[in-house]
Image (cartoon, rainbow, N blue to C red; front, side):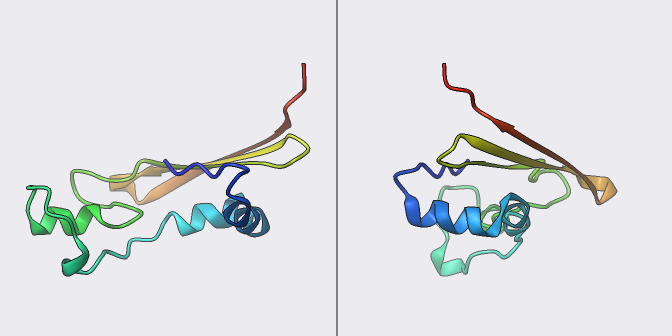
Length: 103
């Protein structure tokens, strides 16, 4: 899971500008890495290729859920989650917005 902290202002600003639902769309990317960029972890080239994409899709293994959480400087939270139902080729979205109250 990638976490963008307030200290990474440039990445946070870009994610906030895009919005959580657009970031979720980016997480659906199935582009695989070039063979020369793949690590050699001992699982074989074919499996390394499959595991190199942001969104992993295969018959027996893959991405089940993608989540994005954005928190602004006023403690407003946007949480978006997309569930994938592999064999069915369908998905379900959930979105929550709330404010973190200071104690």
